Image (cartoon, rainbow, N blue to C red; front, side):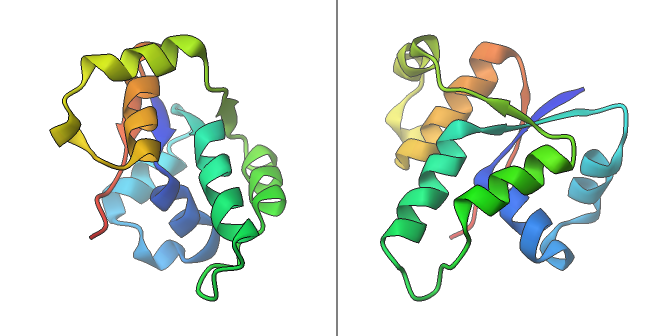
Length: 118
């Protein structure tokens, strides 16, 4: 299968894999699966990093390199993804980055591996 990983999932994978569930670990470790991360997720991390948030010190360049080094593929944001956002109710998610990942996964026929963190 092909999976688009939510930002939280690949941050857990990179920095605190003990927070991943067994199901998440199995999906990620299965060599048959193609794993993608979104350029929108890197953008989200870069914004938080650039704002010098005291509880967020993840370097987006190092993160992106690490994902590539581990066989992940990057999914660019396309105009079609942006237009696909119009197909989803606001109640699905108010977070613009989450909405983009949902739209990308839907448009590209990828399963979205995500976890809601409140």
